[in-house]
Length: 390
Ligand SMILES: *[C@@H]1O[C@H](CO)[C@@H](O)[C@H](O)[C@H]1NC(C)=O
Ligand SMILES: *[C@@H]1O[C@H](CO)[C@@H](O)[C@H](O)[C@H]1NC(C)=O
Image (cartoon, rainbow, N blue to C red; front, side):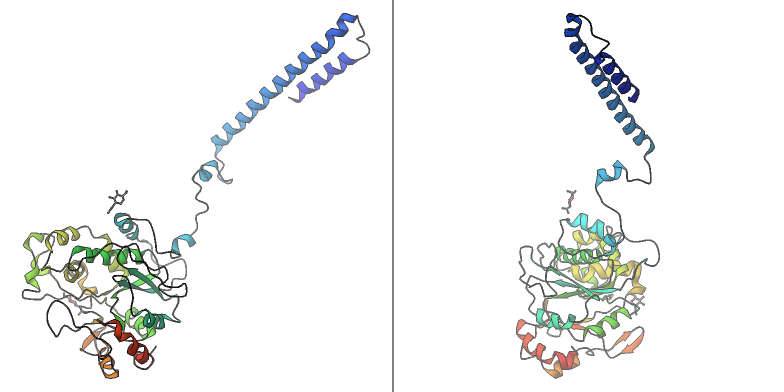
């Protein structure tokens, strides 16, 4: 290219030298010839540049230099891959995944032991509600000062709009939900949806299911230590005779589930991450319960206890942490209001029954209690510092 240019310059100077002083005709022809040469040079220059650029591109693709960022990466526009984006909990619990996508995503497990970052195990509180949380002020007191040790997830009616302010622990903690019918599979599905959402935060290690009418019976620190220090997960898991136990079993569930594997437990559980994963990944027992456990079979009392007991019964404490009063009989437990909530009443609840904790006799068996009506909030707030220790 450079050579051509130099020649062009030479030609140019040759044409314009005083030596070329000829006839009038040749003089008038000179500028045209000059133009022709210039044009030719221009075309040549352009041609060479175009070929050159293409050659460079071609060579780049052949080499795909690993040091410099390649065109292939920028094509996907993912940015840099960093661990941070994987281990940080999502800022917003809202997402656009449907249940199949969510369960698939939530079932992913690291296979390598240990964590290459500082992981503080958290307690995930999963609220199964219609929408409103009448005991929110009590829970706010309970969680205060324990940031980083818990996460909250709320399942509500799908169209419920919560109105918690930015300063509330419940602000933006409502997950994408679906309608729940009492005693139907949709109940177990809602619980599984809560577990799946909570599993997306890799720091959540223990998962507690509570309802809008549940209240804590002890301070956060006590509950955190009790659950994190337990060798077992708190899932009720009884082989019960009679109509409300083995009587709810359906022989059609064989061979996946046999009568001797059939278990019953309270709906209100606390399980660790390993068992939570077991639930979201289950595709064996779920179809059996969906098809063959219908009223008067209540799948929320049988599905998780039975499926977990088949493979992991040595991990279960076979009791629940949530006190409920069934003494009146019937399908629904007793509800307690303003007049019932006294100092004596609250004091006796944690030890209302004797139990084992890590295979030792324990005074404290219940950490939560239900059912309470909204009118109980006022006496609970008053008694909380003294009785509940928060
Ligand atoms: C979720 O969405 C995927 C992709 O559109 C679809 O194949 C799947 O059936 C959906 N699952 C549910 C439970 O709606
Ligand atoms: C719970 O019950 C199972 C039998 O279903 C038993 O194997 C397990 O040891 C029990 N767990 C505890 C903590 O007692």
